[in-house]
Length: 277
Image (tube, rainbow, N blue to C red; front, side, top):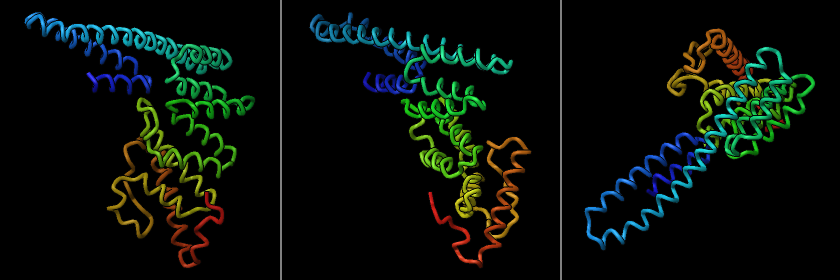
């Protein structure tokens, strides 16, 4: 029972109310079966075990009711978000934003980070960029936070040529590698995109060695490959399924590698930033 309840608590914390509901129902079924089996035991054994067992079942019923309510609220909020995305695709951004904000009003706290990220995406327009910035930062304060918010905020800063600030956000995201992020986000894809953008930030900042390291980490079994002489012909990880993107990343990697080779004899100061992040 203890292990099952810990699993329920963990699932609720990250907003997986459907899975938590299923776990609770399974646990209650087990306890009810145990209760029924007591009828074959002595009166003393029944009285010793039955009352605590019934209290446990009632407590779990209360937890199940709350969990079910949050699951329904989450489903309704996600439906609002889906409608919001469809409206945005139709060019109705203002109406889409209304739907997304409606989702925020009903979604349980453990899912607010996702909804705030969706709102921030809708606000990424010339007139609302400041609002998008604030919304993404608010999403990062939620528990659990949404890694997509941190990536999109960094992406905004990158587009505004704020490379140092973007690199700070991306470095934290890459270094934590999903340890604090909610697990129903496709963290691997987010991390891959963040790592690529971090490499590009470092390149813009003149931190060529750091850029090279981030590009290296995008490749499969990089430690077993010969990276001593460019150009390289490496297979990118499966996350880069688009051939155009793959070719572009490989071209950037070769370019950074050539820069290192060309400046190798000019001293380390040519490769390191004077103002490291």
